[in-house]
Amino acid sequence: MTRIVPQPVANAVPRWVTSGAAAGTPSIQAGGMEEAVSTMRQLLHDGAPLWVDIDVTVAAQHRLLAELFGFHPLAIEDTLNPDSRVKIEEYQSCLFIVVRGVGLDMDTDDPYDLQTNNLYAFLGPKVLVTVHAGDVPSIARVFDRIAKAPDLMQYGVERVLHAVLDETIDAYFPILQQIDGFIDAIEERVFVDFDDRALHDLFQVRRLVLSLRRHLQPSREVMNILSNRPSTLLTPDVQLYFRDIYDHVLRITDALDTYRELLGSTMESYLSQVNNRLGMTTKALSVVATLSLPFVVVSGMWGMNFARIPLSEWPYGFWILLVGQAALGALLLFFLKRRRWL
Image (cartoon, rainbow, N blue to C red; front, top):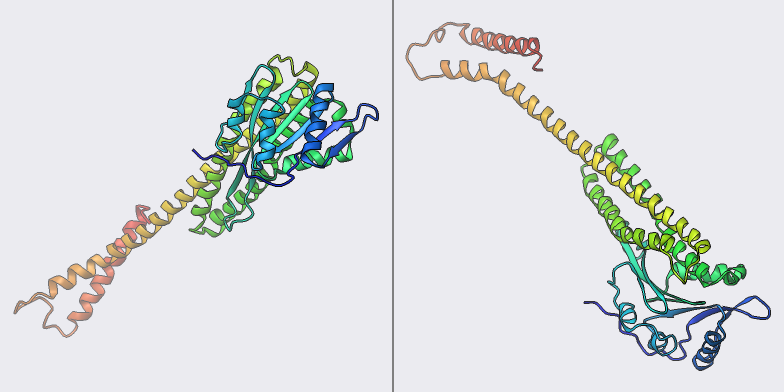
């Protein structure tokens, strides 16, 4: 099993956000690790809203999951496994959520390569801890939103969790637009140019669609639970926001199903064109073989090694046979057209 090994990094302070009790404005903190841990411990004691973002590749940050927040060891172990399945689990003091973010890998020459990353979230009373390996675009975008719109933290960490999950799921939409462009290009190559190399790209796009659906499908159940299952950590008013994400998941799933059917019909059309072209080629070869049959038969009969063969001593025997063969070929051609076999 693949496992992430946290590395020691000097002064690797996690990013964290809180809402100031007096001023009511959030502050994105940075500083020394000891000072940051002391401040976060005090905020937890005071019950202030707190969002902490942990990078599991940094050992000092990963230790905070157990030493500062006291999360369940099984959930902490899952954060080190990049192959953890998408799920939601309820522990005594928190909800543990695993979702999978996707994006097209721009570092490869293959335009259909996917890049995936697991995002883990611990939701407790007035505390949210997000965990991931390396940089995650959805997390960065939410931090930017909070910096520009500080009101988000005042609504509670549940709304921050909604923003993070919403950004993660919405990352599928740009990929859908690119898939739409891929399919349009493939259809033009199949129906207009009949490019025999289009079949390879068609299978690649089909594999991309199936991979996206495989990564997204478990998120449907997670968002359904967050939207509908009663929880002490999520009020009905907050669950309405997660219902919006659930709707996005359904829309993306429907779009992927449509793309899969469209690719299937395109592949069937491509194979039908191949069969039609093969049939036309076979038909042309059959006509050639049929028309050459009189020449083969007559030439074979009059080419036998006998002393006396009719017309062999006539001065115009060759031309008579030639005209006879042409006439038989024309008669066969007329017969085939009359029967509509050509």
